[in-house]
Length: 65
Image (cartoon, rainbow, N blue to C red; front, side):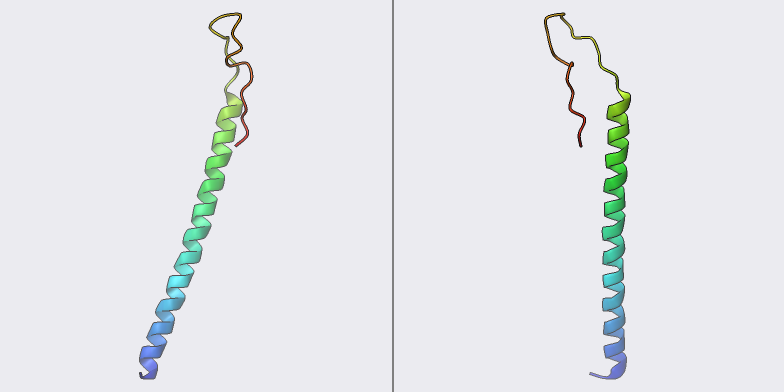
C-alpha cells in the first residue's frame, strides 16, 4: 500500500468521524429544542372544565417531559 492510499484512507476516516460527531450534535440539539417547545406548549394550555362537576378528569395534568 503506497502513501497516497494511506493518506486517502485516513482522510476519508477523519471525514466520516467528523460527520458522525456533527450528526450526533444536531440530533441532541433537535431533541433539546423539541423538549423545550413541548414544555412551552404544555404550559401554555390552561386547565379546562370537566364535562361533569363530579368528574376529576383534566384537573391534574402532569407536564413533566
